[in-house]
Amino acid sequence: MSVAKDLVAASATPLILSILAEGDSYGYAIIKRVRELSGGQMKWTDGMLYPVLHRLEKQGLVESYRDAGETGRERKYYRLKRKGTKALAEHRSQWTLVHNTLQQLWETKPCLT
Amino acid sequence: MSDVEKRIEQWRDGLAGSELLGGSDVDELESHLREEMEHLKTTGLSDEETFLVARHRLGDIATLEQEFAKVNPHRRFARRLSWMAIGVLGYFLALHLSLWATNASTMLGYVAGLRTPHLTFLACVIQVTAFAAIGALAWWYLGSRSTFRTTRRMPAAAHVSLFAACAIVALWLGDNFLFRFLLIKTMPLQEYSQFAMASDWASAGWGILMPFLIAGLIAVLALYDRRRAEAR
Image (cartoon, rainbow over all chains, first blue to last red; front, side, top):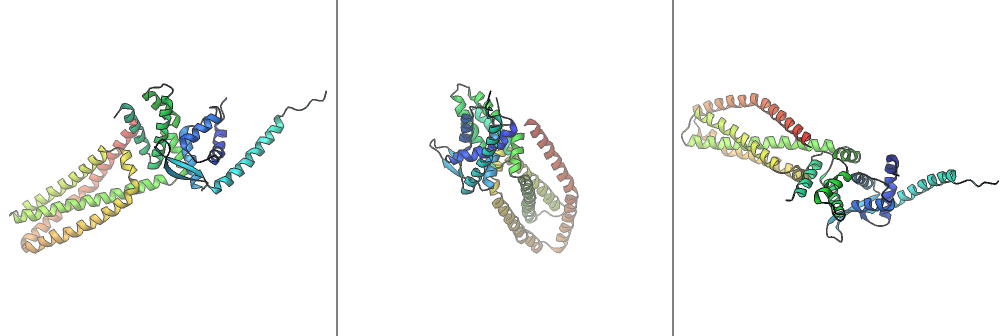
């Protein structure tokens, strides 16, 4: 099973914000994390991540800095800002609401006979 | 350079050629590509194969452009505007450099005993040759470097433009002070009026020819650009 394109696009922002909430990260590592978490079933076209990251940066939710990681290769890292944390909380409550609503409909109904 | 490095450079060039991606965007995408390739190498793929898979996963240029355009909708316009400004500045710089060469050689020719119409003929030949030579040099310089390296320096374009504008003014002043002033002072009136008349004829011819030359150049550039786009 793979996730529909629209849903992948819609979940990109909360996913990125949540991954950055775990700690600063860079493009490739974010993609890898999404792949791991979804068992490879959420397929992103890797290049699409960057415009999303840049938009979040423009909106002031994340900020970027250059740093040579443990391998000595310089990368562009992204860090969650305070506004980003707030936006993440907002996303989270919305997604939880959707999830709970669907969950109630899909729960197996108790049978009395 | 290995084959894979060449292919990476080609791919990067394709991205850098886009008006919608900035230098840092290309850097970021390249860094991603290389990391993916390194990861894929551990699975036993060849260098060539890792490149193909990593490139595919990043997505094709058209799709990337579309997504990047959503973030920076004004970038295309800004890029075009800056190229136009560079073109205008470049034209004036070339014009004034060729004027320098023309007036300097006219001075030398006069001192060496040349007179109108030979002197005017010399001036015309020098002007056209110098202008064409500067154009050819610029063409060769830009053509010999990859698009990536050229556009990567776009942030420095403002400094370059400022420098070019100053150079134009300096050349212009220097030209008038050094050569034209000296020419007026040293030539007898009769000689000077003949020379001025011939020069005016030449510049009228140049003025008539110029729009056609520019139109021709634009046509050649458009053709070149289309070929490149097809090659992509």
